[in-house]
Image (cartoon, rainbow, N blue to C red; front, side, top):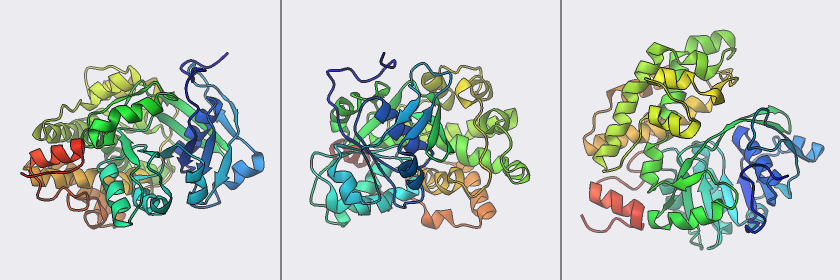
Length: 381
């Protein structure tokens, strides 16, 4: 009997390439294969692929989930060669930390086709804009359809070599193409595999709607002593987000929503997002987090040298602050978290992070920015 929400027999069997063999990529590759799709698993280095090659399958665990089939998932192809990976794919699911997007854009540029659909899972803030810019700079001969999701569809972890566990699948995940008017084309393809994807308007809205800036760097930094002292021996969301931590997150959330308002975008609060994504309700953000069963059992990272800081500060927080400066939207809570991250990690995330300049938004009016993400070009002021 097919799993709930699995691919209808009449749906096209698109060939998927999952780029990235980390916590998210392993889970996605296994889940897609168990749904019946041909899957190529690509990783830039061999080390994460070797256990899958040796075992022959990815063992997917999904205890307690009635909409995800557990079992042994066999890949059609496992490779470190981007040309080989893309040649065998219709849909390219990029599942790497956002600081890897630029590298993958460079690797993919010579091998992309016009009929490829490239999806960043997720884009963080400005991922699709950065990816398209690099393809153009590298002289990519094709015009693939590029899109990004608001967040990653799974809460998942690699639990053993060649073994992944899915803790939860979000109810709905907004996705947007660049340009936005082509979002329906992306949805037509992805809904063959995922009924959870819904229209996300445009890539600025998906970026600003990514609540990772709240739940990742801020929570990590305010639990820094606990992470270092226990090596992550606590439940990250349920124990790491206390009432006082949640109040800081709510201040950052207000700034994020204000950025959306300045651009004429309706951005949901984090509390609203938790309800829509997980059916998790509460009178404040703390209660909504604690009510989410999908967070149960997810342990904290064992070190501060983790993508929750190294990815989310430069790739989400810094570009939001940069955009706020251009639009005249104050972001004191976001800025405080970014400054603390720089001091704590000994890194200049202001220099390495995405900015309005690197995303091609510098000097554009709100009208031009909106036209760029919806139509593909900014036009006249």
